Image 1 (spheres, rainbow, N blue to C red):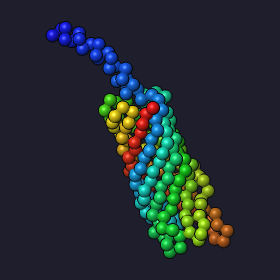
Image 2 (image 1 turned 30 degrees about the vertical axis):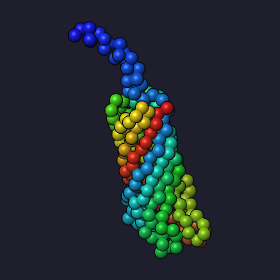
Image 3 (image 1 turned 90 degrees about the vertical axis):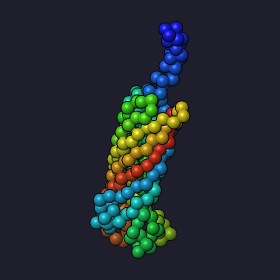
Image 4 (image 1 turned 45 degrees about the vertical axis):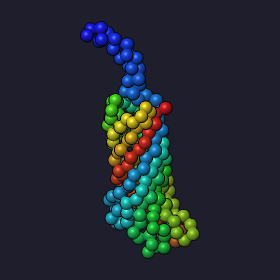
Length: 197
């Protein structure tokens, strides 16, 4: 029996580098996310002149982990909200929020699955289409937060379900009518696929 245990020691030692690499999570990763965004607050209720509806969202970006638990990320993000009032104003029945997001990610390393938490800064704009042109708000700075799980698949690949929140102001300037602003807030449920290089 003792000889059998001694025979397993070289095998365990050979596997340890792969296990350590899976646990550290240090390195560069690419990630794509898709889901559904739900407007909240005045952006949903129409108190500021807008009444947005839930719509699809996607993001594509990358992440650099400096330690097993801490990294930075950056992504391009786009969300297409429905718009109840747009048709009455002869606008397309959707409004687009898009721009960049960057921030910090904290995660708990694990062989199977691990929780993660993100906090970021947004630089995004809101736009409508109609009258043969595109009405675009000024680019504004907001904030976001997210949490989820990282579930290991094959080596390098992860499924990353999550929920997130964003808030960013949008201000429109018009020539013939008063300027209008709205605080864009939304919750998102999405699923990401990440590959670590």
